[in-house]
Each structure stands twice: as structure tokens, then as C-alpha cells.
Image 1 (cartoon, rainbow, N blue to C red):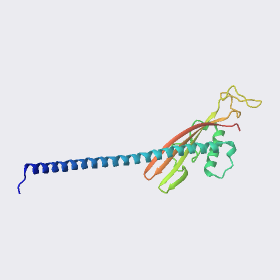
Image 2 (cartoon, rainbow, N blue to C red):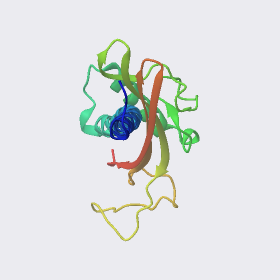
Image 3 (cartoon, rainbow, N blue to C red):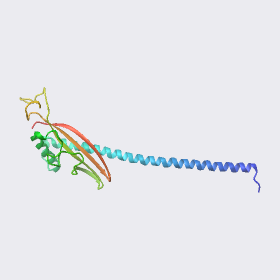
Image 4 (cartoon, rainbow, N blue to C red):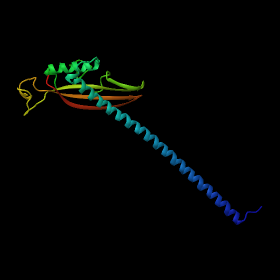
Length: 200
């Protein structure tokens, strides 16, 4: 059987079609693999963003928890951690020499607060055994709040620059360091707030 020129051209066209099809299949496979890699990266990045946002929320919770328990109206509690915070606040308010340095609520009042050092963090509900959320609190008494051109009651406020007085509110700095642990990964976030407590 002899091949004519027309038969040869048909075979060449068929061969070119097969080559183009194979080339397109290789290109589509490469594109699919790179898209799947990118999607895995996006899934991982969104998980990290979620854990980071969770750490920020836990730090906010630590600030709100501290503000609630540092208030004079909220002293009656069976919460051991809250009792530690209240006790530290009272001892810092009594001793002016302890002002200006952050203190850890889980350590003696003379120890400094070092973020992330305390293993006794206050736990927030965990979703699973390998997933924990907690925060630690550092409390600093900043002294009396300097108040001027204001009055309260017949005596009014005495500015902080004057003699020691109980007529001005105390100023506090609260630092909350949050940790969200998932397996071997740990996400941290720190928040600080300054508040003034009412005159006792």
C-alpha cells in the first residue's frame, strides 16, 4: 500500500494536533497545580489571621476583666484570680514605693511583671486539648491622677503635685498579654489600658 502526498499531509496534521493537545494538557496541569498550591497558602494564611484576631480578642478580654475587677463595686467574688488582682491593687495603693513598675498578679507584689513569663495565665474556654487560650495581667500603679480646675464635694480635689492625699483618684496601667496555642504554634498579642479608680 502506497501513501500519497494527501495521506502524508493528513498524518502530519494528526500528529500536530496530538502534539498541541498534549502541550495544552501539560500547561493546564501546571496551572492547576500552581492554583492548588496558592489555595493551600491562602487557607493557611487565613488560619493565621484568624488565630491572630483571636489573640487580639483574648487580650481585649484581659483588659475588660481587669477593669471589671479593679472597680470598687466588684470586690465580692469567689474567683481566685480576681481575688489576686484585688489584693495586688490594694497592696499597691497602700505602698507608694511600689508605684511605677508593672506587677504580676500571680507573684509576690515585689516581683516585676515580665510578659509571657508566667505560666499561670488565666485560661479562656479551650476548644480542644491541643488548643489553649489564656492571658496574663500586669498591674502598675501610676500614682494619683493630677486633677486641676475641678471640684468634688466641699473640699475639692488636691492635685497630685501637692501633698499625699486620698482625695484624688489613683491612676492604673493594665497590661494584658494573650496567648493562643494551637499545637506547636503560639500566637501572642499585648494590650495596655490606663484607667482611674474612684476615690475610696
